[in-house]
Image 1 (cartoon, one colour):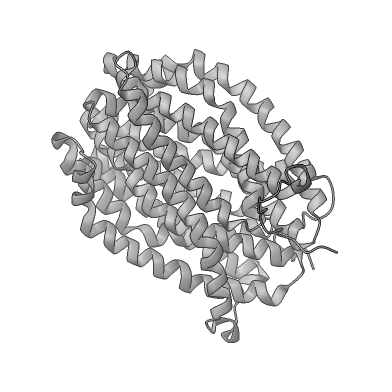
Image 2: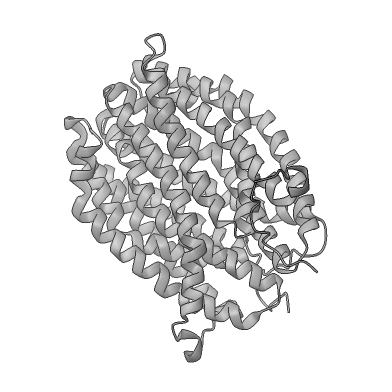
Length: 464
C-alpha cells in the first residue's frame, strides 16, 4: 500500500528514523535554497541595477507579502499533516477526500487575501511608516505579489500533500525549473524592459505560476491519490472543519510570526534608508540560512505525522533526539562561515560602503544566535505533526510578544540604538526555543512535569 508505481511515495513508519528524515530533508534543502536564491537574485538585481532605494522598497514590504502567503501556507501545512496521519494509518479513502476538499479550503482563502492585498497595499505600507521615497515602488511590489497569491498557494498545497506522502523530490524538480525561469525573467524585465521593481515582482509571480501548474499536472498523472473521482469532490464538512481546526492555528502561527516581523520592520523603517537596506540584506541572508532548519522541520513533521497515524510515539521521540543532534552539528559548521564572510556577503547586494559596514556588523551579531534556531524548528515540527493546534497559537503569540517587546526595549537603549533590531532577532529566537522545548517535554514526558493544578495537553495519539 505504501508505494505507488512510478511515484516516490515513502512509508516512514519503519526503518532508521534519522535516515528517513535526512533523506527526505535533503531535496527540501536544495529546493528551498533554490527558492531563496531567486529571492536573493531579486535583491541583487534591484540593488545593483536599480539602486539602494529600490532594494529598500522590496525589503520594506517583504514581511507584509509573507504575512499574506503564510495564511495560505499554514492551511496547506495543516492539510499535509492530516494526510500524513491518514497515510500512516493506511486510510486511503480519507486521503482522496482530503485532497479534493483542500481545493475549496486553500483556493477560497487565497482569492480573498489576494483581493485584500491588491486593494490595501498602499494603506498598509503607510501604516508601517514606509519612507516616502520608497513608498511608490513598495506599493507596486506588494500589489503584484498579492495578485499572484493563488498560484503560490496552489504550489504550496500540492507540495505539502506530496511531502505528506513521503515525496520530497518532485516539488524540488518543479521549484528548480521555476528558479531558473525567475532569474531569466528578472534579467529580461529589469535590464531589457527597464521596468524596475515591478519587473522583479512580475518575474517572481510568473515563475511561481509555472511551478504550480507543472506540479499539479505531474501529481495528477503520476500519483494515484490525485486521481480524484466525482464522489471525492463532494464537499465534506468534517474534513473542511478539521482542515481549518488544524490549519488555522498553523496559519495563525505563521501569520503571527509575520506580524511580529512587520512590527519590527516598522521599527526599522524609522531609522532611515541605510538601516532599511542593511536590514533587507541581513533578512535575505537569514532566509537562506533558515532553509536547512526549515527543511529538517518539514521532514520531521511528515515523519511525526506518519508515525502518530501508525500509533508509534516512541519512534517520534527517537527521531526528535537524532534530529536535534544533526541540527547542532550543522549549526556549529555554518556559524563561522557567516561570521568570517559577512562583509563579502553584504557586498554582493550593494556597493554602498555605509550599508555594507552596517550589514556586516549585524550579520556577525545574528549568526551567533543560530543555535536557537535548531531548538525551535525540531520540537515545533514534532508538535505540528502531532496536531498540537494549541501550541501553534502559543508559538505565534510568543514571537509576537518577543519582537514587539524586545524591539522597544533594545532600541530605547541609547548605547544600542538601531542595532537593537538585530538584538531583537537573537533574543526572540532563544526565548521561542525555550517555549518550544518546554511544550515538547509536556507532550512526550508528562510524568516528569506533573504537578497539582496543571492541566497537561491532550495526547495526540491513541493509547493501545
